[in-house]
View 1 (cartoon, rainbow, N blue to C red):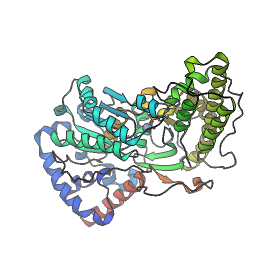
View 2 (view 1 turned 60 degrees about the vertical axis):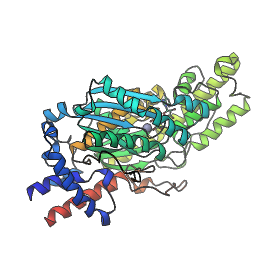
View 3 (view 1 turned 60 degrees about the horizontal axis):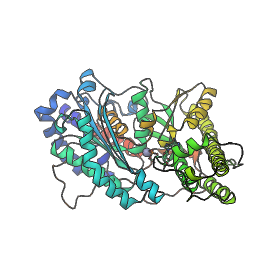
Length: 479
Ligand code: KG4
Ligand code: ZN
């Protein structure tokens, strides 16, 4: 009985958290595959934490109520080496990270030139671009780390949220590597990875903490209770802040080759942030949700009223034209960030009521590389005696390190899959989750501004993990 207990929880990774009715068959099958996989001599030296009980098995309640760091051992930290693959949007990224958090390599192939040409991400072209470079990006990550696939311990890959066509390229590659070299595979939630990478750089960062995740497609305020357990305090009802930065850059005729955000941030330094009176979104809604569609429209109107021609690049603009564009950039940035500040203050107050022990606000995602955002949010947290944790800019924008690290965190508590077959059949259905919430919505935080789109939304990561824990309890009681 003990040996079956040991193998139970790890047979369910987040990749295979299927509806309860269909759980039992894959479970039994996978339990055997996993046993086979663990018996292989080359895997033994890693001292898998699986062989210590994942905490959810010992005490399912404790799994979500402590602020402990997951089980780890020196041998695990030093010997465990994970390849992380990220292709959810427009960057093809891979990295290799050790269990102790040492980054052995990091490679990002950007599609910024496509972004500049089309003014946004075109899924089909993004997929093609990923397919063209994915093998090279992974190879470069291995070369930079001076490793071969044989020396890896596991592969972690983003399965959502993101563009299906793009996610598929990364998942296919991850399964090919894992299958060919008999490696376990860990499915990663992109937004969880943005939050957890903060724990790689700030070793003191314990659960629970508050996180503001700001990127091109997401604007999330989440309370992180524990690994895989998040409460969503707020989200955007339309566009994310990164999208507003990108469109502002495009309409101002800025160079988008490093994406729009950095271009707006740079030009804003020359402008007068008080000169254009944009209104702050959703002032009358006393919740933690966001809206950037209205601010985008205000920017568009301001640009039109000043006769700014986006076809004239900034480098060719007259000095009057340039300063007019800089004023808009600065005024937009100020109001976009005021909206963040206002929502964060409320979120901190809510979070302190739910989890009085929180000490940190994590700010991550591409927009968190903006220095003005960091400085303003630092002032917010100081009012509450909290500490701001922002990963360095290259770990805020999409990267493979955050995926590898999130893989490591999840592996430690037994959430992974055994190696896939060396070749997937042609009709293999990949488990991709383009619309996949991170946490359960906080009831008080529901937006009364406009109902959020809910079509084809996958059950949240948190609800799946909670079901997984409950299922473990039932299985243990039955054994
Ligand atoms: O997290 P990320 O790399 O990809 C997504 O998951 O979306 O975020 C990309 C977004 C883009 O909208 C980009 O313009 C924005 O992050 N961004 C910035 C800055 N650097 C990147 N926005 C404002 N200021 C920046 N310095
Ligand atoms: Zn991202």
